[in-house]
Length: 140
Image 1: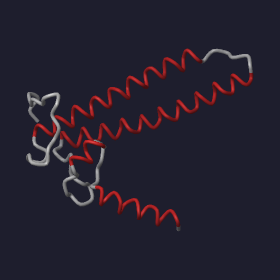
Image 2: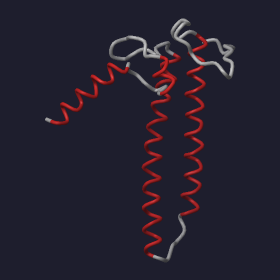
Image 3: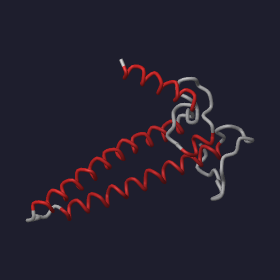
Image 4: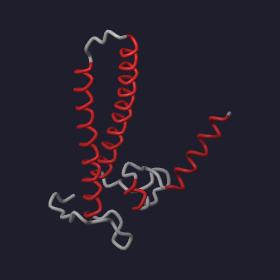
């Protein structure tokens, strides 16, 4: 990937250009990196907030409420940590030239899907089949 690939700020990948050309790859790399940076900043703010909130609260109801808020915040951060790991995996796929292709069928994942969910690893059809199989196995 050429580090000099120019992607205008108003660029949106289009179906009429070659799939996963340098411009599209750079577009998705930047989109993923910006998403990851936002998540990391949120996590840092949360950690600062939790450290400041770690004071002693005398009222038992207030303390319980604070603990509930803290627990919810930690669960949210855990989900974001897992999301960052999926973003890193997508960035690796870009570096390896595998980004944008379904891990099940090898078919291109639609640009519309990738733009909405840049960490997608399957086409919509493959994802639906996967979820149906999961549901069948869960119901057993």
